[in-house]
Length: 216
Image (cartoon, rainbow, N blue to C red; front, side, top):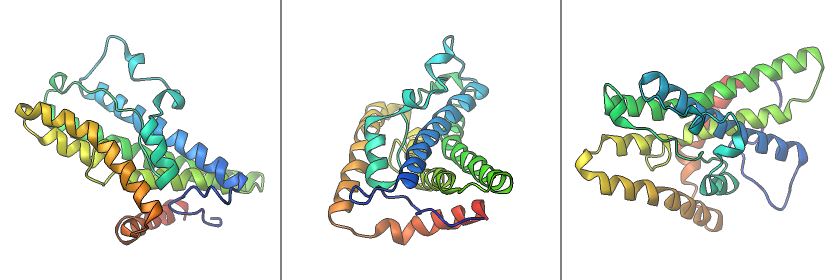
């Protein structure tokens, strides 16, 4: 379809290229928007309805930005939105529907990547425009979707594991949800200073495979 973007995109503070930077920023904003709104939508459909739905449905990416999640984007090329509030007791099947809701976030990121890839085809066919910015959006959303397999909250796999814990362990759940983001950011700082290549060996090949499939 076009020349590939850097996958996953790692922010290079010493070599900033305008098109890549714009693609990264747009990718980050679209990824938090689709991830958060996807969870909010499915939670509502499954039974967790709110009297004030605007508490979850902002349709404004900036309102979904999380400080540590944004730091993770800058350090590791992936991140997360502010945690979407979910009341398990409102679901007919609390644990199952909570897990489905959390998994809808990364699935929404794959949807965003697909939409961006479709825009590339349209723009190249009609206007002969360079698709680098849209490739960046695809790359960031695919990276976020795949990295949500990391079993640490607030990433989807981590939230699913927390949801499986007994309600009697509520204090532990709260601690895990608080500590998780700090653990991820601390590891990303360490990875930048002392590269271990752990992501390259496990997650990045999957990121590139999915990215290649979506972009054709």
